[in-house]
Length: 388
Image (cartoon, rainbow, N blue to C red; front, side):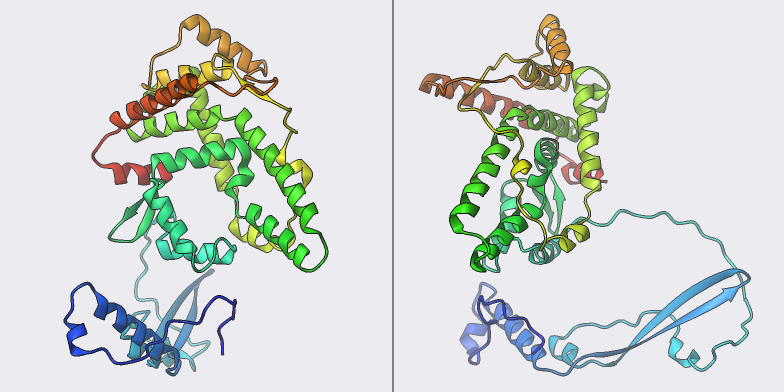
């Protein structure tokens, strides 16, 4: 057959007729059974056939192209009850033998059109891309799509089944891009799969691959922790854009955060999935990919310049209390001088339970403030505007 055996499981196949009582039962069971039967019968039915034609007409120095398509044999489309509309107002098949004929121009009109951005991905579009890039299995891919919806990363348009990135989803994507762009790309998973393939072929040992992978992701974690403030900056910018506070991002720490947002957008635009797909089988995990090797212990100072810049930016965007002018000025000066991360090597000192609870309460309070200041109307329209 034309299918590919990927070793998971055979397709769902109907085994018996559906009883009359089952047909009248509630819950959509009959619709599901009908879809399974129709799909099965379509797979064993004749192919559908279309005849297409294309005409190239030269007017002066300009060449115009038009196409037509007509269904000549419905085949499996008859079983699946699908509509096949003709394409093109004129059946160009009748002009196949008139190549080189002279035509009379009846009239000429000049119209202006603008290009449109591609639509957002639908659930089926995302599943198809995940399959191409080897993300997930047949059993887990649908759960991944469900997760991005349930966690609020995207908003689902029920009419078109297309997923519109939310403020939270855009903020996390931009924040990750600024910290470690590779974490957003499917090539990270491809690298690990290639390493597993090398183990299966005897070209590498499990112990060596496991040790190298742990080292790399340990460095990735350390690098991410060093630049975590950028994620919070992107959260502030995203929610500020959502409520239409564009004027607050023209200067100061908020203006710098807005510039980082634009930088992250350009990084996303520069990614071409086709290039990643072509390189998928050749990519390998590199030791230097994870970044700097982490020290033995880390201590996070909550009053470092990086944290103060984030606090100042969030305050300028309308979230939380502003820092004092003196602290904000010193924080910006130190950040520009390169001492903006605020992470120091020291012996491990786990926080006490009261400190940890206080930190969690502060984060929860900040999140609630952001949520309360979001507009409750026209949310879907605003998200589409952000993406465009």
